[in-house]
Image (cartoon, rainbow, N blue to C red; front, side, top):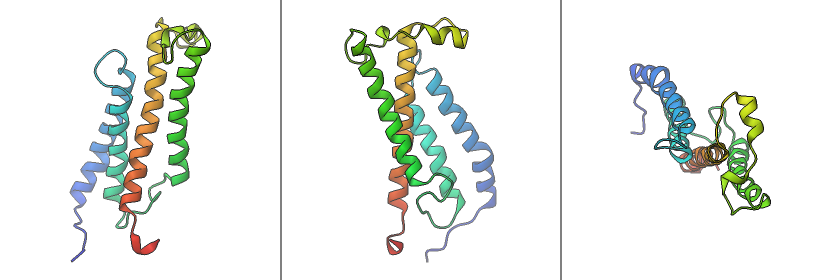
Length: 154
């Protein structure tokens, strides 16, 4: 009785409409996280949900890395997110401020590169949000992969 329910209409709608919308919304929440409700955690959860939805509508068996994101890549992404968070906090201390005091990090060079005039605090916060986004999204996908793994094929 373990036969999957196949609905091509649901797969079509999810793959062609829901997943792209979820990815765009995750990017929107990430970019506007320092100035409006949202941020790295919420964007990471939305992005991971899109990846998990692709995996759920894709293959019959859910094995880790079955849809193009192998486990080592996910672990590297999670570690990179944590590293971005920690390095940003330590950089603030190296410039004489408290841990994670974004205003102390000299990011004026980025304003010239991006063509925008943003404060150091906003840019530092965005860097932190990016690290949290990477960490949360990859850890949630790792958890899904491990929970959906077939125990008989270990």
